[in-house]
Image (cartoon, rainbow over all chains, first blue to last red; front, side, top):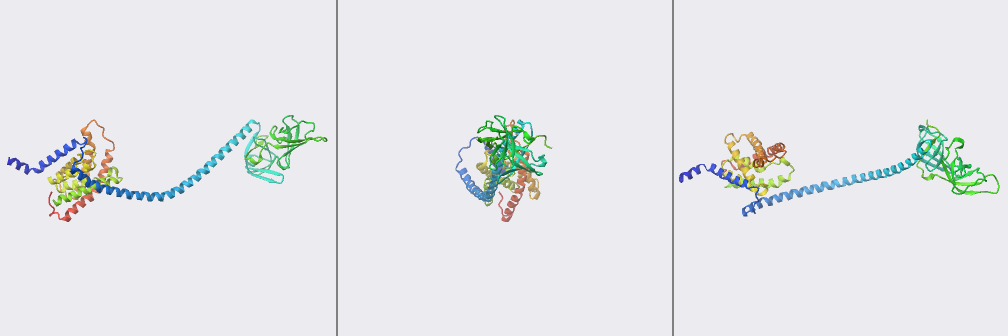
Length: 277
Length: 168
């Protein structure tokens, strides 16, 4: 018996190792099975690691939190400025989009008007207005470069605007229908009788040389007659506002409202009776 | 007895740091295993039965605290300890490159064990992807942290006076 004990004692490291390994294997082989509630020793061991570990973790998380908050505050100011700038850009962009959309609709209408007629037209934007006494004019953003020249009629889908009086390299001036110097040969849509529409200088048209014998009433539509070869035939000029038929003379006094609202003009068509050069 | 308490203290400190500080650091697979270094050191310096019991105990504590598979750390620590002490008896363990080689070799062994034991238990199971990157990262992480830790343990022992340090 003692011999066995001595044998084991002499090889205690080997036997101790085997016992430890066997124990470790037994723990390991039962590893995934549900663990029973830890005993008192295990609880003490857990507490010895858990509380200092928790203290370190909380401290680190606290420090990290402070760091994050500081950098967050520093970043928030910069981010705020950046967001404000972005918002401003977006607002501008949105406004431009809306304007482009509206412009698109207007241009489409103009194009449809242009296509519905046989003549060639060049679209132009109104970039200036002038009203000096009874003289009305517009400035367009197209000039010689687009083939424009004095005398060309200018219209929109609503009706006649006027004619070009001066042409620059990239801009041109338009005398409006309502200008005192403007005179447009017209005919009445209803009875095809002819006259001349002159600007009165107060935003209205006076239709002259209209026979006293012709029947004309308020609301009748006046169109370009195409006489003199300046304006194409059939463009709306205005609507009769007032008719005064005197008991004497050859003609009657007629006043008309222009078909075009000049105060809202943004795009127009410059009409070519032939192809632009 | 003082020596056992000292290494228990080291073990406690390493386990606490392992489950708190090192768990907090975003190191991923490169996160070093502090207890691994202590086991390695004990295997190199004190390959005795007392050392084996201590190592088993520390593995057991780590199992209690953090293991998802109970008994894995106890067994691994023990196998590592016996492996290192077996090698140490055959080469000069005080030779400086030995530490680096030991860390690298046993890191690889540890990772392979971690990755392959489920496969050994169930050979039909598919091995998870990323083994090579895990091997490289963990080995590099262990080398970077392990060499200073081993040096620290060695210096702490020498400061006490190696001759007077009771053998485990």
